[in-house]
Length: 336
Image 1 (cartoon, rainbow, N blue to C red):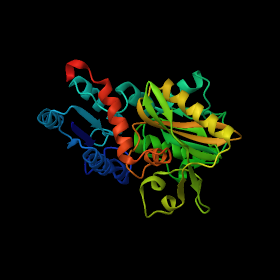
Image 2 (cartoon, one colour):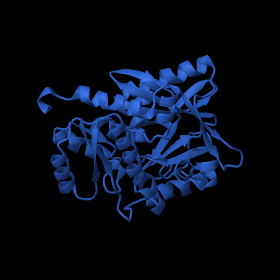
Image 3 (cartoon, helix red, strand yellow):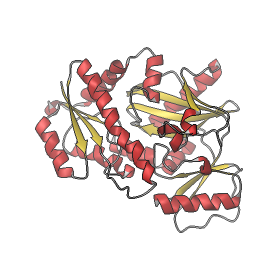
Protein backbone atom coordinates (compact mmCIF):
# COMPACT_ATOMS: atom_id res chain seq x y z
CA UNK A 1 0.00 0.00 0.00
CA UNK A 2 1.30 3.46 -0.92
CA UNK A 3 1.25 5.74 2.14
CA UNK A 4 2.14 9.42 2.49
CA UNK A 5 3.74 10.09 5.86
CA UNK A 6 3.10 13.78 6.46
CA UNK A 7 4.86 15.85 9.11
CA UNK A 8 5.35 19.55 9.76
CA UNK A 9 8.49 21.57 9.45
CA UNK A 10 9.10 24.70 11.53
CA UNK A 11 10.56 28.10 10.63
CA UNK A 12 13.93 29.17 11.98
CA UNK A 13 12.27 32.00 13.89
CA UNK A 14 9.19 31.18 15.96
CA UNK A 15 6.26 33.61 15.88
CA UNK A 16 5.42 33.22 19.54
CA UNK A 17 6.73 31.45 22.62
CA UNK A 18 10.36 30.81 23.44
CA UNK A 19 13.11 30.17 20.90
CA UNK A 20 13.62 26.67 22.32
CA UNK A 21 10.00 25.73 21.66
CA UNK A 22 10.85 24.71 18.11
CA UNK A 23 12.70 21.65 19.48
CA UNK A 24 9.44 19.84 20.19
CA UNK A 25 7.97 20.62 16.78
CA UNK A 26 11.20 19.69 15.00
CA UNK A 27 10.80 16.23 16.55
CA UNK A 28 7.99 15.55 14.08
CA UNK A 29 10.58 14.67 11.42
CA UNK A 30 12.16 12.01 13.64
CA UNK A 31 8.72 10.61 14.41
CA UNK A 32 7.94 10.48 10.68
CA UNK A 33 11.17 8.59 9.97
CA UNK A 34 10.31 5.99 12.62
CA UNK A 35 6.77 5.52 11.31
CA UNK A 36 8.10 5.27 7.75
CA UNK A 37 10.59 2.57 8.76
CA UNK A 38 7.83 0.59 10.50
CA UNK A 39 5.60 0.85 7.42
CA UNK A 40 8.42 -0.42 5.21
CA UNK A 41 8.96 -3.33 7.58
CA UNK A 42 5.26 -4.15 7.22
CA UNK A 43 5.59 -4.28 3.42
CA UNK A 44 4.03 -0.90 2.61
CA UNK A 45 5.53 1.82 0.42
CA UNK A 46 5.87 5.00 2.51
CA UNK A 47 6.65 8.43 1.08
CA UNK A 48 7.76 11.24 3.40
CA UNK A 49 5.81 14.42 2.58
CA UNK A 50 6.87 17.40 4.71
CA UNK A 51 4.62 20.41 5.24
CA UNK A 52 6.54 23.68 5.30
CA UNK A 53 5.31 27.22 4.82
CA UNK A 54 4.00 26.59 1.28
CA UNK A 55 0.63 24.86 1.10
CA UNK A 56 0.67 24.70 -2.70
CA UNK A 57 3.86 22.62 -2.83
CA UNK A 58 2.56 20.32 -0.07
CA UNK A 59 -0.61 19.69 -2.07
CA UNK A 60 1.39 19.06 -5.24
CA UNK A 61 3.62 16.57 -3.45
CA UNK A 62 0.58 14.67 -2.18
CA UNK A 63 -0.98 14.63 -5.61
CA UNK A 64 2.27 13.32 -7.07
CA UNK A 65 2.46 10.48 -4.55
CA UNK A 66 -1.26 9.63 -4.91
CA UNK A 67 -1.34 7.73 -1.60
CA UNK A 68 -3.95 5.22 -0.61
CA UNK A 69 -3.83 6.66 2.92
CA UNK A 70 -2.10 9.59 4.65
CA UNK A 71 -0.34 8.94 7.95
CA UNK A 72 -0.90 12.36 9.51
CA UNK A 73 1.87 13.41 11.91
CA UNK A 74 1.47 17.17 11.40
CA UNK A 75 1.40 18.91 14.79
CA UNK A 76 0.80 22.41 13.45
CA UNK A 77 1.49 24.65 10.51
CA UNK A 78 4.76 26.56 10.15
CA UNK A 79 5.34 27.12 13.85
CA UNK A 80 1.70 27.55 14.86
CA UNK A 81 0.48 24.51 16.80
CA UNK A 82 -3.05 25.92 16.92
CA UNK A 83 -3.35 25.23 13.19
CA UNK A 84 -2.95 21.46 13.69
CA UNK A 85 -6.69 21.06 13.13
CA UNK A 86 -6.49 22.93 9.82
CA UNK A 87 -4.00 20.44 8.39
CA UNK A 88 -6.41 17.58 9.06
CA UNK A 89 -9.21 19.67 7.52
CA UNK A 90 -7.07 20.20 4.43
CA UNK A 91 -6.58 16.45 4.06
CA UNK A 92 -10.35 16.01 4.26
CA UNK A 93 -10.94 18.69 1.64
CA UNK A 94 -8.45 16.98 -0.66
CA UNK A 95 -10.34 13.70 -0.20
CA UNK A 96 -7.61 11.69 1.53
CA UNK A 97 -8.24 9.09 4.19
CA UNK A 98 -5.83 9.85 7.04
CA UNK A 99 -4.83 8.52 10.45
CA UNK A 100 -5.66 10.10 13.75
CA UNK A 101 -8.19 12.57 15.06
CA UNK A 102 -10.67 14.65 13.10
CA UNK A 103 -10.24 18.44 12.77
CA UNK A 104 -13.04 18.94 15.31
CA UNK A 105 -11.35 16.72 17.89
CA UNK A 106 -7.92 18.27 17.34
CA UNK A 107 -9.27 21.79 17.77
CA UNK A 108 -11.31 20.88 20.82
CA UNK A 109 -8.60 18.99 22.69
CA UNK A 110 -6.03 21.69 22.05
CA UNK A 111 -8.31 24.21 23.75
CA UNK A 112 -7.76 23.16 27.35
CA UNK A 113 -10.62 25.34 28.62
CA UNK A 114 -13.27 23.92 26.27
CA UNK A 115 -11.99 20.43 27.10
CA UNK A 116 -12.36 21.09 30.83
CA UNK A 117 -15.85 22.50 30.34
CA UNK A 118 -16.87 19.27 28.63
CA UNK A 119 -15.25 17.14 31.31
CA UNK A 120 -17.07 19.04 34.05
CA UNK A 121 -20.37 18.75 32.17
CA UNK A 122 -19.92 14.99 31.95
CA UNK A 123 -18.93 14.78 35.62
CA UNK A 124 -15.40 13.65 34.90
CA UNK A 125 -12.83 14.78 37.50
CA UNK A 126 -10.50 17.62 36.51
CA UNK A 127 -8.69 20.20 38.68
CA UNK A 128 -10.67 23.36 39.59
CA UNK A 129 -9.62 26.26 37.37
CA UNK A 130 -10.08 29.78 36.11
CA UNK A 131 -9.13 31.51 32.87
CA UNK A 132 -7.52 34.93 32.45
CA UNK A 133 -7.55 36.33 28.91
CA UNK A 134 -5.11 39.01 27.73
CA UNK A 135 -6.36 42.40 28.90
CA UNK A 136 -8.43 40.90 31.72
CA UNK A 137 -7.63 41.44 35.37
CA UNK A 138 -7.24 38.61 37.85
CA UNK A 139 -10.30 38.51 40.13
CA UNK A 140 -9.72 40.21 43.48
CA UNK A 141 -10.57 36.96 45.23
CA UNK A 142 -9.17 33.80 43.66
CA UNK A 143 -11.42 30.95 44.74
CA UNK A 144 -8.77 28.31 44.19
CA UNK A 145 -6.43 26.71 46.69
CA UNK A 146 -2.71 27.42 46.31
CA UNK A 147 -0.37 26.13 44.98
CA UNK A 148 -1.64 26.71 41.45
CA UNK A 149 -0.20 25.89 38.04
CA UNK A 150 -0.40 28.30 35.09
CA UNK A 151 -0.39 27.12 31.45
CA UNK A 152 -1.14 28.53 28.01
CA UNK A 153 -4.75 27.83 27.05
CA UNK A 154 -4.09 26.39 23.61
CA UNK A 155 -0.69 24.72 23.40
CA UNK A 156 0.53 21.13 23.70
CA UNK A 157 3.87 19.35 24.22
CA UNK A 158 4.23 21.14 27.60
CA UNK A 159 4.92 24.45 25.84
CA UNK A 160 5.05 27.24 28.41
CA UNK A 161 5.33 24.82 31.35
CA UNK A 162 8.41 25.31 33.52
CA UNK A 163 9.27 25.17 37.20
CA UNK A 164 7.97 28.76 37.43
CA UNK A 165 4.53 27.57 36.29
CA UNK A 166 3.74 26.36 39.82
CA UNK A 167 2.99 29.38 42.02
CA UNK A 168 2.33 29.67 45.75
CA UNK A 169 1.02 33.24 46.07
CA UNK A 170 -0.88 36.00 44.30
CA UNK A 171 2.16 38.02 43.16
CA UNK A 172 3.83 35.01 41.49
CA UNK A 173 0.47 34.13 39.96
CA UNK A 174 0.16 37.59 38.42
CA UNK A 175 3.71 37.37 37.06
CA UNK A 176 3.12 34.00 35.45
CA UNK A 177 -0.16 35.06 33.88
CA UNK A 178 1.60 38.11 32.42
CA UNK A 179 4.33 35.83 31.05
CA UNK A 180 1.77 33.62 29.25
CA UNK A 181 0.00 36.66 27.81
CA UNK A 182 3.21 38.28 26.56
CA UNK A 183 5.06 35.18 25.36
CA UNK A 184 2.29 32.93 24.02
CA UNK A 185 -0.24 35.64 23.12
CA UNK A 186 -3.24 33.81 24.51
CA UNK A 187 -5.28 33.27 27.65
CA UNK A 188 -3.72 31.73 30.74
CA UNK A 189 -5.30 28.63 32.27
CA UNK A 190 -4.89 28.60 36.06
CA UNK A 191 -5.53 25.28 37.81
CA UNK A 192 -5.21 23.97 41.32
CA UNK A 193 -2.00 21.96 41.45
CA UNK A 194 -2.83 18.32 42.16
CA UNK A 195 -0.04 16.74 44.20
CA UNK A 196 -0.20 13.06 43.38
CA UNK A 197 0.95 10.29 41.07
CA UNK A 198 1.04 11.18 37.37
CA UNK A 199 -0.36 8.60 34.95
CA UNK A 200 -0.44 8.44 31.16
CA UNK A 201 -3.34 6.35 29.90
CA UNK A 202 -3.17 5.43 26.21
CA UNK A 203 -6.25 4.43 24.24
CA UNK A 204 -6.52 2.79 20.81
CA UNK A 205 -9.64 2.52 18.73
CA UNK A 206 -12.22 4.03 16.38
CA UNK A 207 -15.66 3.23 17.71
CA UNK A 208 -14.69 0.30 19.92
CA UNK A 209 -11.69 1.45 21.97
CA UNK A 210 -9.06 -0.42 23.97
CA UNK A 211 -7.29 1.06 26.99
CA UNK A 212 -3.62 0.06 27.12
CA UNK A 213 -1.64 -0.55 30.33
CA UNK A 214 -1.20 2.65 32.36
CA UNK A 215 2.22 4.29 32.49
CA UNK A 216 3.42 6.32 35.46
CA UNK A 217 5.79 9.28 35.46
CA UNK A 218 8.10 9.10 38.49
CA UNK A 219 9.75 12.31 39.67
CA UNK A 220 13.15 11.95 41.28
CA UNK A 221 14.07 14.03 44.35
CA UNK A 222 15.68 17.38 43.63
CA UNK A 223 13.24 18.71 41.04
CA UNK A 224 11.74 22.13 41.84
CA UNK A 225 8.26 20.66 41.37
CA UNK A 226 7.00 17.19 40.38
CA UNK A 227 5.69 18.19 36.95
CA UNK A 228 6.34 17.22 33.33
CA UNK A 229 7.84 20.52 32.20
CA UNK A 230 8.94 21.38 28.69
CA UNK A 231 12.54 20.67 29.65
CA UNK A 232 11.49 17.41 31.32
CA UNK A 233 9.85 16.28 28.11
CA UNK A 234 12.27 17.52 25.42
CA UNK A 235 15.69 18.65 26.73
CA UNK A 236 17.62 15.43 27.27
CA UNK A 237 20.59 17.07 29.02
CA UNK A 238 18.44 18.93 31.55
CA UNK A 239 18.01 17.88 35.22
CA UNK A 240 14.24 17.91 34.62
CA UNK A 241 14.52 15.34 31.82
CA UNK A 242 16.82 13.09 33.83
CA UNK A 243 14.54 13.41 36.85
CA UNK A 244 11.36 12.46 34.98
CA UNK A 245 11.26 8.68 34.67
CA UNK A 246 8.47 6.60 33.04
CA UNK A 247 7.42 3.28 34.59
CA UNK A 248 5.16 1.01 32.53
CA UNK A 249 3.03 -0.73 33.49
CA UNK A 250 2.35 1.47 36.50
CA UNK A 251 2.19 -0.38 39.84
CA UNK A 252 -1.44 0.38 40.74
CA UNK A 253 -3.98 -1.27 42.95
CA UNK A 254 -6.73 -3.00 41.02
CA UNK A 255 -9.29 -0.37 42.04
CA UNK A 256 -6.97 2.47 40.95
CA UNK A 257 -6.24 0.82 37.61
CA UNK A 258 -9.91 0.18 36.86
CA UNK A 259 -10.94 3.73 37.76
CA UNK A 260 -8.11 5.38 35.79
CA UNK A 261 -8.95 3.32 32.69
CA UNK A 262 -12.68 3.99 33.04
CA UNK A 263 -12.18 7.76 33.33
CA UNK A 264 -9.73 7.78 30.39
CA UNK A 265 -12.10 5.80 28.17
CA UNK A 266 -15.04 8.07 28.98
CA UNK A 267 -12.95 11.15 28.19
CA UNK A 268 -11.78 9.57 24.90
CA UNK A 269 -15.40 9.11 23.85
CA UNK A 270 -16.66 12.49 25.10
CA UNK A 271 -13.97 14.33 23.11
CA UNK A 272 -14.63 12.09 20.06
CA UNK A 273 -11.04 10.88 19.81
CA UNK A 274 -10.24 8.17 17.30
CA UNK A 275 -7.39 5.81 16.39
CA UNK A 276 -5.15 6.78 19.32
CA UNK A 277 -4.90 9.27 22.17
CA UNK A 278 -3.22 9.73 25.54
CA UNK A 279 -5.03 10.96 28.63
CA UNK A 280 -2.81 12.50 31.32
CA UNK A 281 -4.06 12.00 34.87
CA UNK A 282 -3.04 12.94 38.42
CA UNK A 283 -4.12 10.36 40.98
CA UNK A 284 -4.79 11.84 44.41
CA UNK A 285 -6.84 10.34 47.21
CA UNK A 286 -8.13 7.65 44.87
CA UNK A 287 -9.50 10.26 42.41
CA UNK A 288 -8.05 10.31 38.86
CA UNK A 289 -8.04 14.00 37.92
CA UNK A 290 -7.78 14.52 34.15
CA UNK A 291 -5.08 17.07 33.33
CA UNK A 292 -5.13 16.89 29.55
CA UNK A 293 -6.37 14.87 26.60
CA UNK A 294 -3.80 14.46 23.83
CA UNK A 295 -5.31 13.60 20.48
CA UNK A 296 -2.61 12.50 18.00
CA UNK A 297 0.12 12.32 20.68
CA UNK A 298 3.73 11.50 19.88
CA UNK A 299 3.98 7.92 18.59
CA UNK A 300 7.75 7.70 18.36
CA UNK A 301 9.10 4.30 19.45
CA UNK A 302 10.24 5.66 22.83
CA UNK A 303 7.18 7.84 23.49
CA UNK A 304 4.52 7.03 26.04
CA UNK A 305 1.92 5.57 23.71
CA UNK A 306 4.36 3.11 22.13
CA UNK A 307 5.62 2.21 25.62
CA UNK A 308 2.09 1.30 26.72
CA UNK A 309 1.54 -0.63 23.49
CA UNK A 310 4.66 -2.73 24.19
CA UNK A 311 3.33 -3.48 27.67
CA UNK A 312 0.15 -4.73 25.96
CA UNK A 313 2.19 -7.06 23.74
CA UNK A 314 2.20 -4.88 20.61
CA UNK A 315 5.51 -4.31 18.83
CA UNK A 316 6.08 -0.90 17.29
CA UNK A 317 5.26 -2.08 13.74
CA UNK A 318 2.10 -3.76 15.07
CA UNK A 319 1.03 -0.49 16.70
CA UNK A 320 1.56 1.39 13.44
CA UNK A 321 -0.38 -1.28 11.53
CA UNK A 322 -3.30 -1.01 13.98
CA UNK A 323 -3.50 2.74 13.49
CA UNK A 324 -3.17 2.43 9.71
CA UNK A 325 -5.90 -0.22 9.52
CA UNK A 326 -8.40 2.05 11.25
CA UNK A 327 -7.79 4.79 8.68
CA UNK A 328 -8.13 2.32 5.81
CA UNK A 329 -11.45 1.11 7.19
CA UNK A 330 -12.77 4.71 7.16
CA UNK A 331 -11.83 5.13 3.52
CA UNK A 332 -14.86 5.85 1.35
CA UNK A 333 -15.45 3.37 -1.49
CA UNK A 334 -15.17 6.13 -4.12
CA UNK A 335 -11.70 7.03 -2.77
CA UNK A 336 -10.28 3.69 -3.91
